[in-house]
Amino acid sequence: MTASIIAELYGNPQTIAVMKHAILWGLLVLIPCLALTGLSGYRTTGTAPRGLALTKFKRMRVIGINGVCILVPCAVFLALRASELKFDWLFYGVQLIELLAGATNLALLGMNFRDGLRMTRS
Image (cartoon, rainbow, N blue to C red; front, side, top):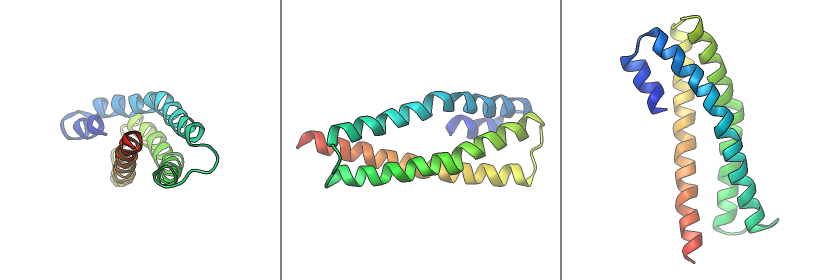
């Protein structure tokens, strides 16, 4: 997210296009890592999570849905649009949606990290 914002503010159109394609390649690593994180949490807490574990699972569902339904399609659209060097209102509108959804996921992941630390202390 930070690299995307920096590219948008200080880069030229080619830099923005390169960054958008790098984000797509990064998804090939990020998505499996998030899936493994969710799977390991599920295996650790069992089939009936309670308390903080249940809260974390609910957040992970939102994170996953947000990623699959908003972030990935936005990343693909923005990479395609950037490769054509089309930086119009539609590009920046989708960019705004992607940044808001990404910030939401970061906040939820941060809360899950915090709650995971709480769980390991007890």
